Structures are given as C-alpha cells and as structure tokens.
Length: 203
Image (cartoon, rainbow, N blue to C red):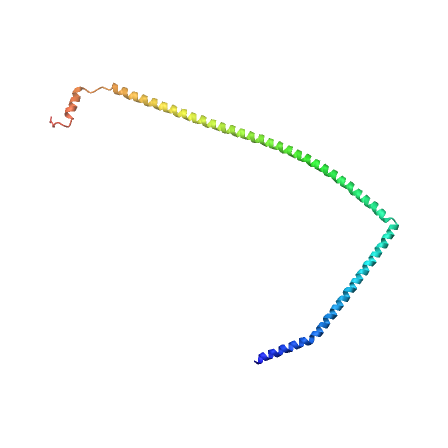
C-alpha cells in the first residue's frame, strides 16, 4: 500500500511539473518559429537581391558585348566551327567507306584463300584415300596370292600322297599275287590237325 501511495504521489508531482512547464515550452516554441520565419524571409530577400544584381550585370555585359559586335563574331565563329565539323564528318565518312571497301577486299581474298585451301585439302584427302585403297587392294591381292599358293601346295602334296599310297597299294597287291600258295594236302592237314575239334593222336 505504501508503494502504491508513493507511486500516486510521484505521478501527481510529474503532472504538476509538466503543467507548470507547459507555458515555458510553448513560449520557447513560438520564439523558435519566429526566428526560423525571420531567417527564411531574410534568405529569400537576399536571394532575390542577388538574382536581381546578376540579371542587371548580365544586361550590362550583353550591352557591352553588343557594342563590339561580339555576337556577330560568335555567329561567324559558330559557322566556322560547324563547317569544320561538316568537313571532318565528310572526311570520316570517306575514310569509313575506304576502310569498308578495303575490308570487303580482304574478306574476298580471305574467302578465295579458304576456298583454295579447302580444294587443296580435298585433293590431298582424295589422294590419300586413293593410295590407302591401292595399298589395301595390293595387300588383299598379296594375301589372295599367298592363300592360292598355299592351296596349290596343299593340293600338290595331297596328290603326291595319294599317288604314293596308290603305288604302295599296287606293290602290296603285286607281292601277294607273286607269292607261292600252299598245297592242298598241307591245307587239309592243317585243317584236320589244327582244328582243335579232334582227339590227340600220338605218333
């Protein structure tokens, strides 16, 4: 309760102080507004005064220059400047045209050189392809000849082998025909004694 009463008392004092200070604050604000207004009006007057003085000075300067025909000289000077600029523009345009023609000629020569290089490359590629095909054809021909020679050797070897086999077979047949045949009695004895089906007869 004491704290609440103290807070109320403090709030009362603050409001009382503000009420007492309010006229002082308002007075200071009014004085500040008055000073700012006076300063602004003074600056406006000075600015207008300087503008008027500058205008009067410009008028006097113009009159003074007019007496010496300065504006005529300025007009002539401007005409000369414009003529110089026109001539410079003509020169620049002429140089640009010449540069364009020169560049076009360079591009033309460059295209012609490229076409020549492309044609030379095409011919070189065609020649390389032709040589490669000839080499491949030659290699294929050599391979075919080797295979043909090998086949012929194998066929010749086979013919010799068959001829040798036929000769040896003919010789065997000739020897068999020339060999003496055993007698019929020996054949009969061989059949009766060596048949294995009869009994043993002692001598």
